[in-house]
Length: 218
Image (cartoon, rainbow, N blue to C red; front, side):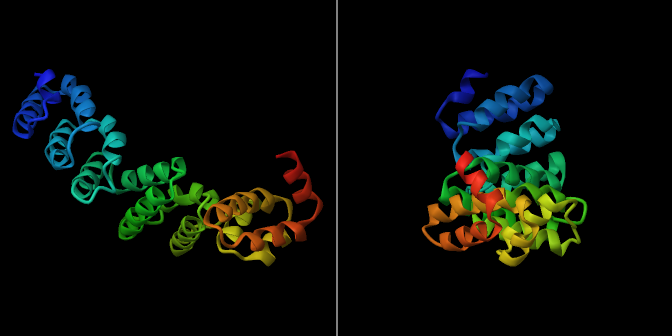
């Protein structure tokens, strides 16, 4: 039965996946392996079986389909069923932090934006890592969502990350050293986009010696 899951025939593979669901926990691993290589039109059926098995191990591999136009809705629904709406946000944030591909980042950001209504005060802090993302649109959206749900920075490092995310250069410069690393990450991201570089370099220059020392040490 496990070998049949690797069959390219749509009907055979899906029947095998559904049958495996009757075997309980031992079926989870082969179903996850199949999920990683199946066609997008097979995801909904496999996701349904995995939800029935109630195994959270399926959440991460399901997240790989979130941005697919065909499979995305089924993947999101399955992740939410297995781990709650916050699990969808958590997986999107993790994937955003891992990717350095601008097109992939754009698709993930759109998917995260679509989750806006499901983000609440308790799940909003999951967005904090995005304040240091290399892409300025990602940083800005995270800062705006966090503010919308009443999140407050815990220290100067987080305050600096918010200031840079919102391109509030005066506040970033006022905070000084804590702003250096966020500004450098922003500078590197701006260089990839070929725009906005001068804003980051100007802020770093205004901070002075701490920024110069950090740049020299890179």
